[in-house]
Length: 317
Image (cartoon, rainbow, N blue to C red; front, side, top):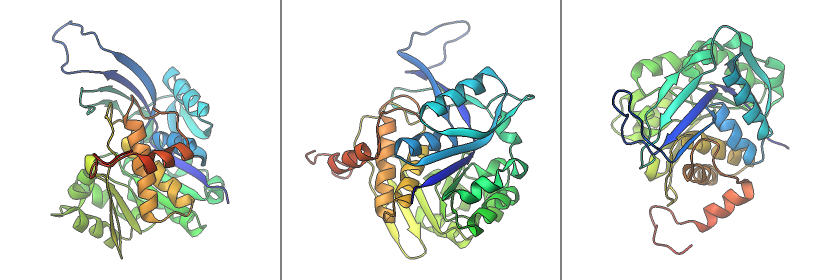
């Protein structure tokens, strides 16, 4: 059966600048190597990597009725993503970020939440969601757990596999805010800092188990250069990161989510799904922006099979 995914939630238009070591003083200017823009966000960014990996993808959310929104939709459509479920708002701008990329690939952000904050259960295409095989909710914290549960619970009851990831930094208040939605999630895909911050746990495993205690079926956590940790009620699986030259970490979490969910849709084991997620993240990290890399599923699998990981980076390719 074809994997049909709806990515629902945050849509962001990113402008990336690299390399940036400091912001010029006053009216000063600095020459840089590259400025580009592209689609991003926990729904849009995940959608484009899912599409590259061969899933049938529809994306849903809110953007402004503005030129930025026009560009965002055009770029998503270029990847074969169905954007017909995206709603346009006349009174608020499309969410956007400006990202100064440091030489080591890390980046701060200047961000406008924009139309993402206006999206909620009343906007949900319930019939279309029920017909999908997978529903991925990007940033449930933007609408709150009760509203997110109104979306996730009916989908899960209809047999749709559900997942979510987060934009907000980890904080116990955020956990309380999203808690009503957690029992409707098959998969939660946070990063390490979010897990520890949400739960206040001393270890990542303890934090993930606390989230499972709220009803999440599986927690797949990204750990930057230390790879990923996949935790269920029965097992803990560590998957190392791949050894690549990192240009930009923008969108790597979304790429991991996409690869992991694509693996789930293909019937792969949790370990195999996490390996595909790590491969997708590594491919995206080697260039600028969430949409970097002209790869497909076969290329990602080949990359995973031939590229050394950081635990054995001296191994032959």
